[in-house]
Length: 452
Image 1 (cartoon, helix red, strand yellow):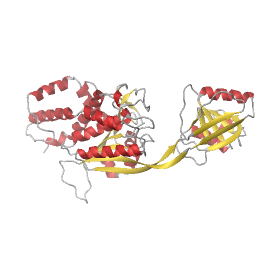
Image 2 (spheres, helix red, strand yellow):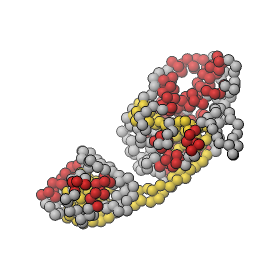
Image 3 (cartoon, one colour):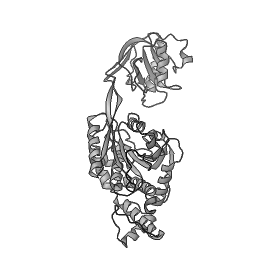
Image 4 (spheres, helix red, strand yellow):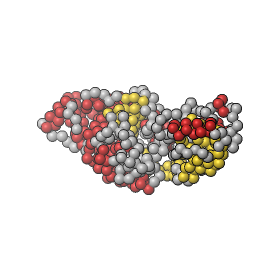
């Protein structure tokens, strides 16, 4: 899909020679023969990548949202498993549980004499409740700011800022507040989370800056007014999701006995397969899943001394839960042998920016080095990197594994929206990312092929 001088020259070489299938590797005695064969095989590997395969995978997966724990996610898991198996892999479906917050079906806020329309939103992990009490202004809700306030039996009205939503709520409930209203400190909509279920919490809602300021003005002029706050239907339930794992074992090693510790390196290529509620998730993240599957197909019969694990993770959108579960269950030996985690997330949108790499600590690592070498060879310049900690590479980085995210930045306008559909996917971007990663992996695993 690219016109780099590198690929043009190698294509010319291919036109003058007959190349054996990728699965057929021969060993040579001279460095010249080795170099020629390596280049030919490398080019053949890149040519095997099929953007149509990836696009069709996205088309299939993005027919419906795949929220973690839903029936639709379970159907996607089975599809991914069958695709891996069709390439000749024995797969493992790793089951894990997580707490899933169910949004309330009813959120109401009313105040005597206040006529402006309000559209309160519940926090993630807001609890059910119905209270009728006086609203009192509590500023930013800091300990110092509320120490002289009598909040017992009151609804505390606070502005966003300085401390977390959770801290604000804890501070005022410690002083007896029975309800909470927090409004934005900037224009626009507001979303918020309390981080986890809290049985001791009280009904809490969010308002826009305009709504909150109008409410502050009203209670200042009309102190002692009673408000009715109601949240119904909110609950936290235990749910189940899955990781799908296909492993390519080293082909050039003697079989390790059950009593012997494996010592070969491991590369993990992964993506999350779940999406958010209401979004079909073509780019986020059927695109990453499609490349993971395509690389599994392309690399299946490439001999190497390195193990490659292809994994799609569940519940990434719930807080990187699937990848965290996978890493937590790795042995110390496995962690010490994983030399690279390539994480694919949102890698196919026509309307996103250019490809970048992200690391959790904003520092280069082995994955960055491999990817920049490959992208320089393919595209004439290294793919830039910066800091990012919102995807599954973080779970690997947390235990010291070199890991990086592949993503296009800035993201598309319909990120996490119903418009994230397959018609907005770029085959060129899919091909580019798949080629960079396949060449990165090839550069790591083929080095020892001719040293026998």
